Image (cartoon, rainbow, N blue to C red; front, side, top):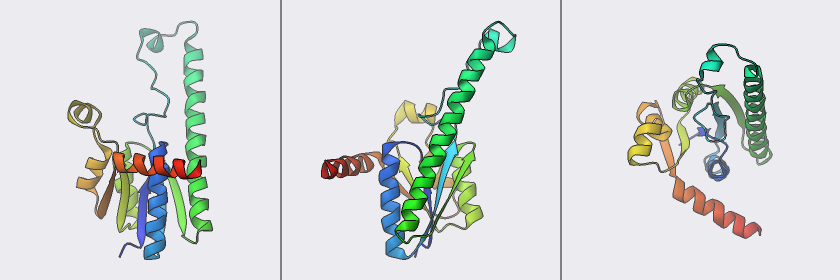
Length: 174
């Protein structure tokens, strides 16, 4: 069965639901978790990349302020993402599921596939935003790339399932 489960997380609320489901699967199969997050400007919560304006190529007064503001936003994004991974790993360990985490930099699909292969994962658990048509063509699909390039099994959790589970969990807490 699935003993080594890589869980691909981003900073969306749906990822919290994905983590919960991965934890339940690991408990049921006596498995271990590797939580992976890719620091990338493709993620919605990441700071937008610096714009390629002419004053970013040639120095102009004030240019360094833009760069410093972006650097601070990136550091904040990096720390918040790391803290989220650490929290999920601690939750899993407290529940009796061995868990470790890695925060890597790069294209999310490539990072996930490489981490799974290096760790020897039996299964990758990943969410899907539900992009179709032009949005998928332009923005790409991390889950689609992983599904076709991973060397192990891949379980894709649809966005509507993750969001409905998150909504019902929120309603139960309230």
